[in-house]
Image (cartoon, rainbow, N blue to C red):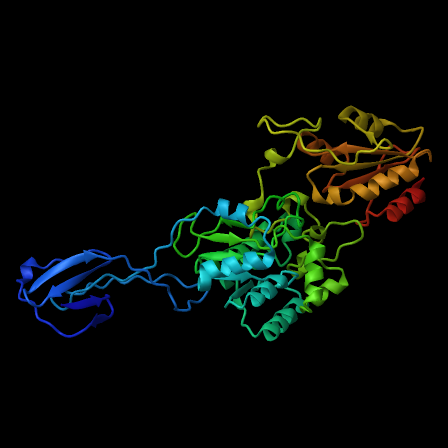
Length: 469
């Protein structure tokens, strides 16, 4: 007997043979089968076999899958359809639980092992360079891509070049569509995001280029950490089916998202970078922690959360650019009304913050009465807050310490929860712009004075109070 196997583009055979069977009796073999030719009897027997073949071709990150539309005449050759690797469905929720206590290096190794050339690291030019170091340490081949928005800091571009030389790699850059950028800038100007929010600009310069990049992959690796943004990233798993973007095969569920450092704290990332002598962006030495585009990034000050250096003119709940918007829960699921009660969805109330015997909790009536008084017996300092706001959480310690220092001094320290049903009132009557907002109510003036600085350490707050009392 002789065995013959062929694909639409290539025929592989042992030796040539002729068929005596009439052409009308020939049928195309089923998918994944071969035909055995019995030379003695001139019979063709079919037997099903399952093929498995790993792709070895290197595709660009935005490559589209190719389709072979050609039909090879059966009279010309006996063909077996192109063999495509069958990827078994996997429960990534269970995999995430199994890797919950794994090290970032172990998670990275598992990701690269599973997806090979169909996975890439998303690199922003910040401390997520740790991902590249972990990939390098696995000894496996890896790919890195980055989004060049056209608005990055010069230091970030220099850092890209340093990273490429340090690891001997080429970063695969993705750029925004020039026509879309031109239309946005011509119609709204270069800095429209300061007036109507950053989402539109990020959609053009970041989200759509990312979408194109991910269409050439089956998985991607991000540097998200739970401690980066407690309001939006507190529950990210180490691996998940991407809830927003699509991968190479198309459709929801076609892309897997790996977050190897999800459970690692920022200080531990920096300890790792120093220990391994990894190059870092020079902006970090200037007070920058979370780094994005130049107009939307600034250094953070004492008492501030790292994400407060991004889009600082907006509410804390808006501080995602859209790349990881699948993390953001519905507002009603996270916020309660001004009385601290849960919304009608039946979820439990969130844990309150700024709890101290030296702090006065003001109700809506209490803050309204304080606002009306023209001659107060004592001055007040009041924080307008939301317990889910990571920036409010970041200043909790310093504000409680402030209350303890001012106890018995003649200055009252209070708090008013200004989210949910109270937000509109706070915006209209209490100068609420974003959380937290700090107000000083002087002893002999009805109008409160808004604390103008981003410095929320105890000494800065005390200096503000002493200057006005």
